[in-house]
Picture 1 (cartoon, one colour):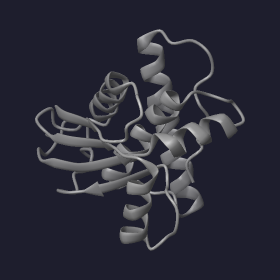
Picture 2: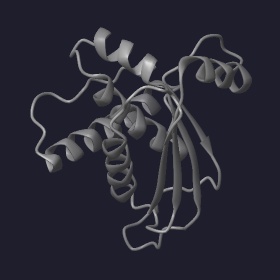
Picture 3: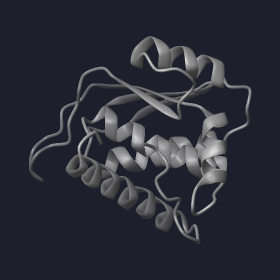
Length: 165
């Protein structure tokens, strides 16, 4: 799995954790090991510009995903996953910090960025949360991936509750 993490935000973030949880999520979703993903960490001004340009919404947001080859998880266990470019995930640590502080289970900016990385991966794989059933499926999968990764890393305490909308 080729995953690049590029921090352009000016904020110190745990880039290794972002890389690790992205790799874990993609493996868990059975994405081809030669697929490629880019994660870009930007400041609030850059995120606001992307949010306006692509979503026509004001203000910065927490995460945006830009799929490339529209890869999907294989439908059956014996199917060979396709290889390709997953796309880009853009994260904003300023928004992540605020969301972590305001969450019911308060958590750090880095924990929020890890959650948002998984959220972004799932969006790249075609998951969405516009409808209640889609939201239940996506957020359930998101929680299972974050919990599995945290358990594998030996991290204790409750996983961050989803704060993405």
